[in-house]
Amino acid sequence: MTKTFGKTMRWVVLLSFSASLTILGCSRHPNEQELQALAQAQQAANSAEQALRDCNNEKANLENQLSQKKSELQKAEDEKQAVSARLANWGN
Image (cartoon, rainbow, N blue to C red; front, side, top):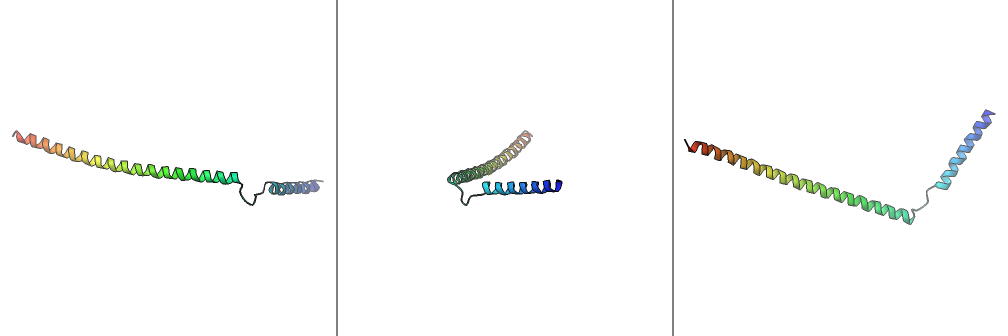
């Protein structure tokens, strides 16, 4: 009885799986809604990639500006020290 039950269950599972593949199987071509959804997803991905590129460019520009400002600050501090040293020696 268990052998018969086991074989029957195997066939039921196999037929159920086959039926689900047949019913839910892929169609030959995507429908219009799927094509529109794909186009929208591609457009969103392209927009996100462009926004990322823009942010990276802005970050690079800001880092360049920061580097320039740090260089200017260092020059100003060096000049301040030189002026302070000359003032200290001027009185002597």
